[in-house]
Image (cartoon, rainbow, N blue to C red):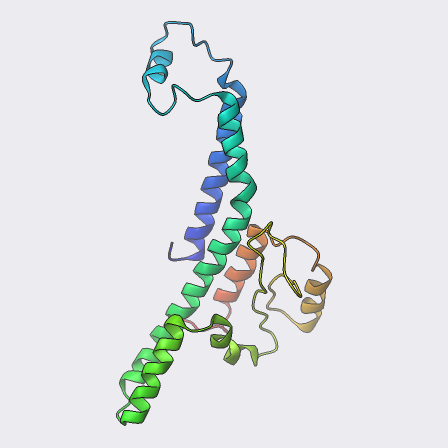
Length: 194
């Protein structure tokens, strides 16, 4: 996954697949397994499906669905981080390549290293000078609850930020996170590839 749209399509596809599996499980036990229908015969011969029980299907779909939102939050934020790092790298490479003095060349290499492997929070410090940027706060991988001072990401005015603070008790859902991260990557205050 290279873009937020890719990650969002993954999220939707898994959610839809688990919904379909849950619905199939409801009817699985009612299929006419005793009939000599060609379709039933093919299912009985299928190594993946022939030993599956309706309860097992339903339980496994629930396991995936229960953790799906939490995993999606991690995936969406990871893709967002990769997008920002790639944009920074592509913006700074031309400038770093023009450095001639050994001290500056070394400093440029350190900057490239920090972009690739450094703290994401520290990378964003320059963008936090702009009051309108609010980087998404930590969404917990456990149950999608926010840690410490939870606020959904926002990139509007201070009024919007205070509204986000009031919503702090709400769950960090993948759809809310996707919307906010997409907004952050499309606004001009974050690095853009040129």
